[in-house]
Image (cartoon, rainbow, N blue to C red; front, side):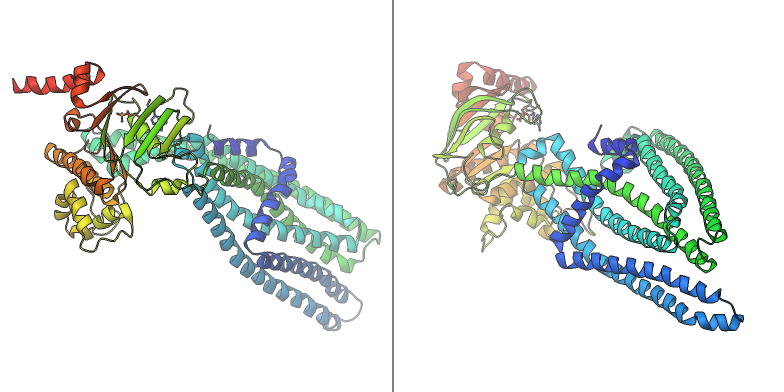
Amino acid sequence: MPEWARVDERAAAAGFGQAVRTLPTAVAVVLRLAWRTSPRLTVLAAFVHLVSGCVTAFGLLATANVFTALLTHGPTPERVLHSLPALAVVAGSYAARALLDAAVAAVEGALRPRITTAADHAVTASVVRVGLLAFEDADFRELAKQGARQGVRSIETSLREFADLLSSLISLLAAMITAALLNPWLAPVLLLAAAANGWASARVAKLNYRHFLDTVSRHIRKTVVEEVATWRTMALERHALTLQEPLLAEYHRISASLMREEVRLAHRRNLVRTTGRTAAGVGTAIAYLVLGWLLYTGGMPLALAGTAVLAMRTASTALSTTTRAVNALYEDSFYIGFYHQLLTESARRRPAPSALLAPADPAEIRLDGVSFTYPGQQEPALRDISLTLRRGEVVALVGENGSGKTTLGKLLTGLYPPSAGTVHWDDVDLALADPASVHENIAVIAQEPAEWPMTAATNVTVGRLGRADPDAVAWREAVTASGADEVIAALPLKEHTVLSKKFNDGQDLSGGQWQRMGIARGIYRDASVLVADEPTAALDARAEARVFAGLQRASASGHGKRTTVLVTHRLANIRTADRILVLDKGKLVEQGTHHELLAAGGLYHELYEIQARAYRSEAA
Ligand SMILES: Nc1ncnc2c1ncn2[C@@H]1O[C@H](COP(=O)(O)OP(=O)(O)OP(=O)(O)O)[C@@H](O)[C@H]1O
């Protein structure tokens, strides 16, 4: 069960008492965030809320004077005239309350966006800065999703809920004080009448959680079906497999079942509210009975009855807002907990900066007894690898699917830290070096390169932003060696074409064309260590030959310094590599030149023969 579902399970199971008990923690979190963002606005918000509550209490008490004036003996016009000063005070207090409400809205309007922006920024910055390995951990990815999206949203809603809670508590207090001043018996009676409404809102909140839990998996399924039924990426297979109608039928089926649940929920909510209202009616009747008894026995003058009724109504509204806010804050507190957990976890996973810098162009990359296991996996992806790569060498990594080639590429470039063993660039252990100093000097060409939604030109130059290239010599070299020049030449606005369908006049590329852009980016980066991971898998034969020649040439020139690692399954391309490393189930099982490995008659020989035989039989 995902973490968010566990939250709602807990929220649905918890009682109101539990929600009240966790309230101080939830409130403390909101206050701390507000205080850290702007102490001045926080104090101001609290002050305006307090004053507004006092004005409410004052207004309620002032109505007593109006009723007293109206209900004294004498002719009616005289009584009305007599009540005018008190009426003016009541009107004044209402006006003041309206102004204070506007002030509350203004202060909160200034504070809330500041807090949510600060929270959003903190969480985004924390996730952006974690090490690459964190993204391989499913738990962290889930936490990042919940903590970032739901966490920040919950901070925003909890601010509203907290403000509502504060106002309703102050109103409730004002009503209680007013009632207690009128007659000490009246205060508990007031609570009794309001409690039923409070119960109903708490109960409706729980019904909503339960409904959400019961339908969440159907909602997810509905979204997934909607995506596969409408997404462009699925369009080809959708049409080719004639899946449109079956998908639509499934979509209707889920929608109909969700609609039935909605109707059932609406009935249940209605039932609870009606029960709440009935109970509130009984409570109110009791309150009126008590009021009548107080008037009858002379415990309270008739003139104060109107104020008592007003206080009762104020208390009832305030209590139901309080209950709803307490419940909402309780649920929010879980997500805000994720938010904090995400900040802590991201900080833990952030590579520590170090004063030790890696050499910019290492003469030697050395792995000693390196093993690596992915987070959450039992089996290591690499086992006890020891090898040395030298500057200027072109080294090929070969092996069957899942043998560990990509993983090895990430370890020798310092993108992943080894689980055991060490990776040295010259005499610097990468585990102790400043990560930025290592990454500054690597270029990685991925098999499925990122499709940057930018212009074609930027898709190349983003490889090394700010690189000085006065006569575009580096640019030309990169696009020519990769074959990206042909892709760009065919674009409507050439290198100025935006490569994303999300923009007007944007253009998408084919898999092979994107791959050429990725290679150009890698070459343009001009780093001293280049890892190309199956860079030509989607390229046509002519482009592939050109790229491999280009990469090897760039390495040899490589301004004399580059170490190039090529991962490939097409063994014909790497016959001229300086050295070939053969991996098998995470182990380095062979290494040597093409001719040495063929002569050795091991795994490389076997793999090469399988491919060569296919061509020979074609030729025959
Ligand atoms: N993100 C990941 N999480 C867990 N295990 C992974 C992850 N990536 C790779 N592995 C596992 O690690 C092992 C090595 O994978 P790797 O991608 O390095 O192999 P490869 O030789 O590059 O494979 P291919 O030729 O298919 O690209 C495999 O068993 C794979 O299942």
